[in-house]
Length: 279
Image 1 (cartoon, one colour):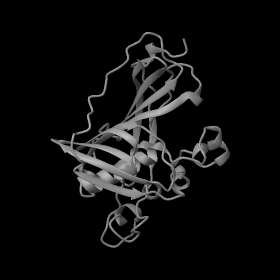
Image 2 (spheres, one colour):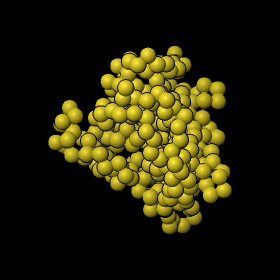
Image 3 (cartoon, helix red, strand yellow):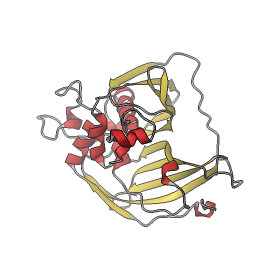
Image 4 (cartoon, helix red, strand yellow):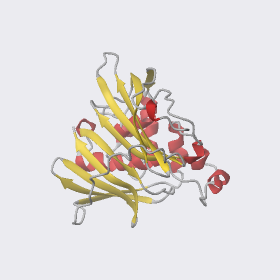
């Protein structure tokens, strides 16, 4: 059997990671910061030497900083792998430059019938073993279900039966994917027209984690007033590809201590079942 359910709970070796001020500046540009107002409200994310400001990092930057060690959970065709879910939890504010030690585990493996869902969790701590962040990715692997395993928990997320309390959006740039790929994901699906055509797209698509980052930007500025100290957790499901140049609108509903959200391109939901909490 290609997938190995016995891998659930297995741990990777520890991985040392580090990031610089330049890395944080590049990530900020990659998720669109400063594009429409280059000398305005996001200067503390896009510059390191502006008078009267201290450089900050976007909390969603943790998704590109690494820390996930190698985990063996089975054999499968990587062309059938889809990044279906993503969540992050910030245990403390991410500095603009720093270092840490990450370790990953196979947190779950579920049988979806025609596909397997593998949940990988990465925890990163500082040199004193104080937790920095947790990142969880859900990987859908087509053709690898059907072994009779647990289907996994069903989502309890329900869109409120009212108009969104807040809608905040940003236009992405037509070259957004070319910028974002400089953070480390050089998959040609996001840059090579011929490769994108093989995957059934007329043009290269935007990285899903770029959509995640632009969404996080909107939540940070809207719910936390632009202060990363208030950013607690964020997660949801990727629903539909985004093309560079499309506008992303984040629809938010305040429900008690949580903010539920969806990210849309027009009427098309591209990131669904979103939940955000303050720290």
